[in-house]
Image (cartoon, rainbow, N blue to C red; front, side, top):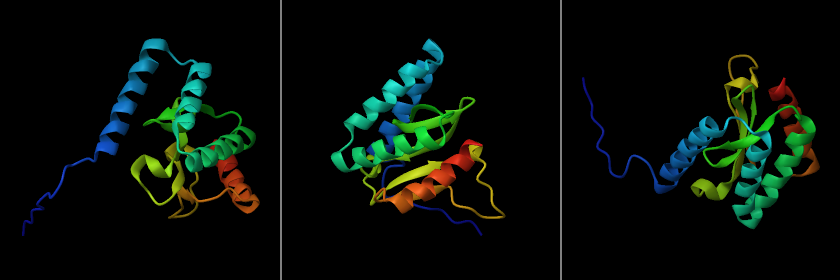
Length: 147
């Protein structure tokens, strides 16, 4: 039996389309210029500077955590959000709440993070506030993700 789904709205929101355009620009720029770590970090910091106060405070805290817990990860942007890579592959990224009008910011991890733990494990963490307990938890995950 075949079922069809009727779309009631656009396939992608304006925010999602903007993020895809940012990613396309990131890929084009990396091909033109090659990998320049200083420029990649500057682009990341520029994206953080554009964030609302609450998201910016969280992002700056996450940046400091990553630099301390996983200094070998390379900073950059991914879909216009702060990200950290290893060997050219994105390990983790910070998604500010305002980016997609979400209730919370997230620190997400991709396949290269190798956070595997049995048959199911978390790959994204909602971040409301960077308390000492949260920093400790995220530091452990970042260290594991960085290898």
